[in-house]
Amino acid sequence: MHLEEWMNYRIGQFSVGSILSALLLLCICLAVAKLLMKVADRMILRLKVEKSLHHFIRSAVKFGLLFLTVLIVADSIGIPVASLVTLLGVVGLAFSLAVQDALSKLAGGLMVLAARPFVVGDFIDAGSVSGTVQEIGLIYTCLTTPDNKKVYLPNNDIAGARITNYSTQDTRRVDITVCASYDDDTEKVKKALRQAIESVPGPLDDPAPFIGISDYLDSSIQYTMRVWVKNVDYWDVYFALTEKVRQSFAQNGVEMTYQHLNVHLVDAEKKS
Image 1 (cartoon, rainbow, N blue to C red):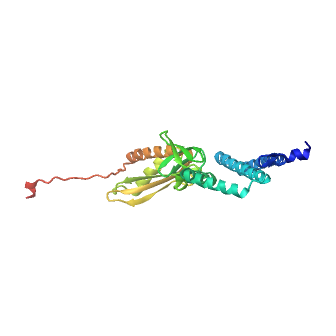
Image 2 (cartoon, rainbow, N blue to C red):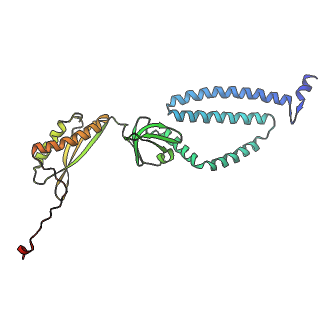
């Protein structure tokens, strides 16, 4: 059998020549795809995205290149590409409807990873949950709460929630409100609060601490203290300062008021 006859020899609907050409084209496409994947990897690394997003982008690019390779090879051996694309489109639509909820979470994960409102290690409020971010996945984000519970939040819920990130700034402000009697002199109260601040390690000098009257209540005057601290010192300063305020009030003779009700019993006979 001559080479030409052998190349024209048909196996089913395809000739040996067309099959060999398709295999050669497949090898070329795979080599080009491998080269493009290396280029894509370098570009993704330059973007400095989260690890989960890196893997997703890489997988999406790889899938796209393989899908394009299949179309090119199929077209080279005479398979109608338009029909193949239509079939895959129908299958893809049916699949997307079946996993609509998962795709919604995936879309939320991509939004979180792209926007980067937080990173691993940040302490955040996300909706009604507070905790330290342990892992950011494509479907769920894992938080560890202050009482050491692991909470997995769907990313579509996080994407639509109000997120407060407490870790992005180097400093935070500690706000504490206390109430003192109307009978106590304002300057004496401020002096006691100032002494409390000075006795606690952690408050920063710049911005300077603030002390002022914030409200006049029914039976007391409300004072507000605002001190700036390093982020890592926030809770230590908050609890220490709250305790020192009471001690300083006692040392300076300031009455710390509280809501109470006085009941006076009147003798009915004396009243008559």
